[in-house]
Length: 80
Length: 330
Image (cartoon, rainbow over all chains, first blue to last red; front, side):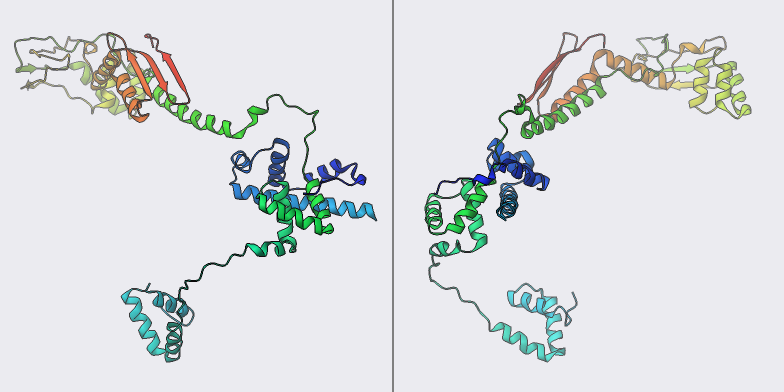
């Protein structure tokens, strides 16, 4: 798998990502942060949030797509 | 269900599947006779049959590489890759795809950038306490334990303090040799004097208040029992059960006008006295505790002293246990 590197003009990527996270619905933000910050498995996140594993996967999927699109939009604006 | 042109298709399918009752089949046949054109439609449906084939299920796995060209499939694969929710074979295939697809690699980089990293300077020492899972278990059992304790206290707490307990109890003189005796009760002028006042006043409360100091026991009788008439007849008690009561053996008692009624018990007072005695012996407590023991499946137990009084209450479940010594004064 190719090595992932963040573009140089993303020096403030964390700020952009935080902004995007704040725009997420509460449940999606929770599952993403539990996944990224704490490294919980889908099953553990389900136990914590009261969701089943499939719901956790779906929320994480939707959140990732939203975050990717948000970051992509910012990137395009910067490129312009 | 009445069959009409709006729902006949459902009935046709149920009929073909054999899910209609005899009455419904009759109704369907009547409907078909009224609508012959639909009868032809049903015949056409009956000819449709899907035969099971013995052919092996084709392997669609080879289609997956082409699927990566679809944006939805590609995005899902990207997310599964960064979530490490991907098989080794899929990962190799995906890597090969990214090498040949520069645009896809950029999208994958964006997905990878969505992974948040915690601020290392923010540390919460009591993070373990925030875990919802552990809290839920404790709360769940806490409610059960609280329910048991409340139930236990309900039975163990002393009776109502307002219960009337006579200070001086004397029912009658006893005579061990006689169980069937006549009892003669003579006319009692004091009772006669109080009851008419109750009727005249029209309010028992007022009467009781006025006479409370003079004859409290007699007025209590007047509240519960209908106004008493003076007794001048001879009452015979044929048999008195003597096993469990202090009333025991009864000897002839003459109640003269000079007798003090405060020495005798009303029915309420007698029941209150018996309850008090039962409490002293721990009968009520043990009954309540045995009930709790059955309800909790022997998780709740108790210990008694030599005289049967409860001296220790214990509760022991898999997750929680406690024991409470009981103060004998309570």
